Length: 273
Image (cartoon, rainbow, N blue to C red):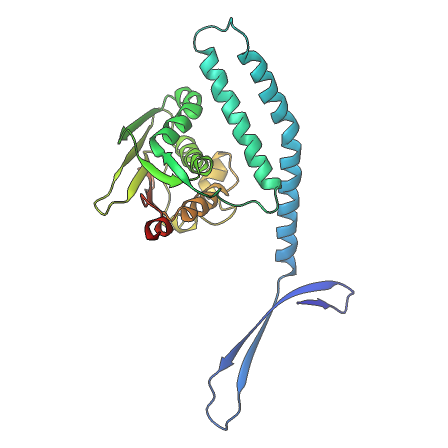
């Protein structure tokens, strides 16, 4: 509810009630709790406004990038691996355009339904190809192992978003010369499993439970100047949950981090049909 205070300002109040046990006398007692959430609402509005402005301003440069790459791809004198590299740039630009559109869409959904068959191996390899220059530049080694094909039902665009976020973290928090491994397989209970393992800096026991908190970043990452917004893992968990999956993280300082995703091979409501 909204209340006009004595200073002429509107305040947003969150009000809840709860019946309380009484010692006797036959009178009903209710606990009334009132919290002033004005600042929280204002912060949420500022974040939404900032996201809208940033997303809107990204559209023009992204359109220019994708347009010029398309022109280059039409040439027939491109040497060696250049066409394949331009394809990666074009795909990345188009994905960014889709993400911007989803942010600007006030009615946007986390995932696009109905779900379709998606091969997680293809998603992993596409994500790895986009991060190949960063991995090479850091002299890191990326190994993809396990099932050559691993199909689930889902939204391929959003699942790629999950892999991009997780692989980006692995690359950022693994030092030069480090190792990153992505393993795909099926568990004994029939679930599809995808694990991303690195030998990077790792997380403290205090930081590990907070990785899904919006805007949370570890003190060590901030001090080291590692870029990030603290939003990626929350997005990952939301998308995984929408696919009826689960995410588990284990980590140890100085030894690295393991992120394990588990998905049903068939969605629950489809299996009941």
